[in-house]
Each structure stands twice: as C-alpha cells, then as structure tokens.
Length: 486
Image 1 (tube, rainbow, N blue to C red):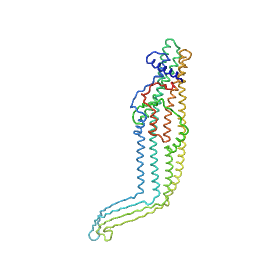
Image 2: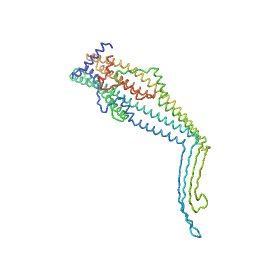
Image 3: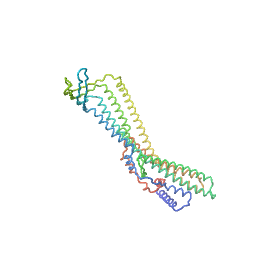
Image 4: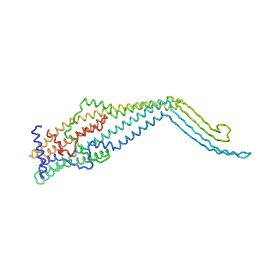
C-alpha cells in the first residue's frame, strides 16, 4: 500500500471514529465503519495477572505437581531402605522366668522348688554375598530416577497447561471482541432498515436477511462467551485461585517459520531430553535389571553371624550344671545357602521377565514413533500458521477494501443487501481466522518445547517479553489496524 493510501486510510478511520462519538443517527455505512473500530470491553472479575505470574503461581499451588513432588521425596527413602540389606544387623533379646513347682510324694512330705532363671542373647549378623541384593539396590535407584523424570515431566505439563490455557483465553477474547463488533453492526443496521421499511423507503424482505444474520451472530457470541467461561474455570483450577489474564500479544510480534537446520537441532534435542523417551528408556533399563535380580535367585548366598548367650539359673535343687549356675556361650556361624528347587517358581518368573524386557523395548520404540510424529505435527502446524498469517493479512486488507466498495455500491443501489451482508461476514471471519492463527502459533510453540523437554520459566519469559498490558492498546478495534496501514 502506498504512502498516500496509508494516509487516506488513517484519516478515514479517524473521521469514522469521531462521527460515531458526535452523531446518534447515522447511515448504514457510518454505523458499520464505527462498529469495526469499537471493541468489546470485558469487566475484570478477579485479580489481574500476566503470563509469568500465572505460570509461577501454578508451579507453587497446583495440586498435581505438589503430589508428584511429595511422591518423589517418599520414593527417595526406598534407597535408604534397600541399602539396609548391605549393613549388619544387631539383635538383642533378654528373658527372665520365675519357676514355682511342688512335688507331691507318696511317702514323706511334699517338696517345693521355687527359683528364677534369666539370660541375654546378642546376635550380630552380616550378609557377606547376595547377588540379588546388589541388583535389587540398582533397581531401586532406577525407580527413583523414573520418579524424578515423572516429577519433572509433571512440572512441564503444568507450565504447558497454564500457558496454553492463558492463550486460549486470549484467543477467545479476540473472537468475542470481533463477534461483538459484528453484532453491534447488525443491531444498528437492523434498527435503521426497520425504520426505513416503516417509512416505505425500503423493501421489507431486506429486513429479514439482516435479522437472520443478527440472530446468527448473537448465537455465535453467546457460545463464545460460554466457552470462555469454561476456559477461565480451567485456568483457575490449574493455578488454584481466581484471576483474569490482562496481558496480550503485541501486534508487532513476528511469527516466523522454523528453518530446516533449526528443525534438525530441535529433533536431536527431542531424543536426548524428551521426557517420554527418557522414561521409556529407564523402563527398559529397569526390566533388564529385574531380569538380573531374578536370575540371582539361582546363585548361592553367604551370611555370617556372631551370637553371645548369657544364662543364669538358680535352681537350688539341681545338681548338674547348667541347671544350676551361670552359662556363657559364643556362637560363630557361616551360612552358605544354595538354592536347588522351589517348584519352578523362580524359573518361571525369570522367563516372564524376558517378555517384560521385550514389552518395554516395544514401548520404547512406540514412544519414539509417537514423539517423532508429534514433533513433525508441531513443526508443520507452526510453519503453516506462520505462512497463513501472511495470507490472512492480505485477505483482511482485501475484504476490508471489498466491504467498503460494496457498502458504497449498496448506498447507490447497485449492490443488494445480500452482497453487503456477505462482504461483512467475510471480513469478520477473516479477522477471527487471523486472531486464531496468532494464538495457535504460540500454543503449538509451547507444546513443541514441552515435547522436547525444553519448557521452563526461561522459555515462558521469552514469550512474555512479547506481550503487553491490555490497557496499553491504542485502540480496542476488532480489526488489526496495523494491517490496514502497511
């Protein structure tokens, strides 16, 4: 567009806006042009928040993440519990018995015998060799590693959910803003045409077309508002508090395609940092370690122990030791346990674990295939949105020029109301498509970073740098005015 054209458009827009403020009774042409410049204002119902604040609050308050972190801290104790198999065990036991007996004799008096005996036993034992314990400890360490990866994956999921829902809300707001402006235009046109029909200046059939479009737009707007309430509820559930997103994407942000060299680097990162793949790899490692642990049941184990026993019995009637007196005994034990047969249970468990390895390897390959498919899909979507935004800019400019032309022609009587309504619908549809593509580009970008394991506060911060407060917008027009002056 030439400089002269840009100046002409800006003057026209300014004139139309002033006309809307100064005049209450205007023509259809002026009503529509002003409606394009007036936005839909949504009242704040909760505390305002920018993207970084929302994500930060979600990481602090989200119950799913808190649960995952608590589970991780709990699983870390499994290492200490399992480590106890390699440490010595010390057992102490003590006993005391009071014996009170009476012997009834056939001749002579009965004899009573009351006495106490007591003793102490101390046993120190240590496993000297058990291959199964070694493999079990390694298996526990892998379990903790898996739990750590799952916790970090949950953290990235929370960041993804909070940020994408934030942009879904902004996308919904843009849709509502454009649809509300379209509805305002339909209402104003319907009032004007109704009056003209009553005055006999216009055929009554034109009123019904405008009425149908107005009701259709009102129904669309109602659905959009309902959907936005649902989105806001989802966002509040993620952050565990009521809020209202008050930062939006700047109009000057560039939505560039991902070049092939950058795509290859991101693909490499996927196979080194993607949490789905890392967890699947650890599952394969665990299944192989479990097979080793099961196989260790066929290997002999060696255990050593030292026991000390002290026993004191003061039975006065006893004539032979140790029934009467103190007994001390030290026992040194070395136990070799060689498994022979237990009904085949260990053998079948070993064979079962072989299939578990095969299953986890299949799952790993499936995870690779799915991750690659998702990666390609995100790349295709991002590049497509980038290309479509360039086309949609041209479409909006063309539809706006077409609408203005048909609007003038209708005023002169050379175009029908159907032509005008069709041009209006095309204009607002292209605006909604343009806004959707902008937010969908960012949403797919966030999801791509989560897939490759690169979604963090730094990533969100780079996106937040390209956002500004909603109150800082120079106009609430549903039309991207910067597109009309290029």
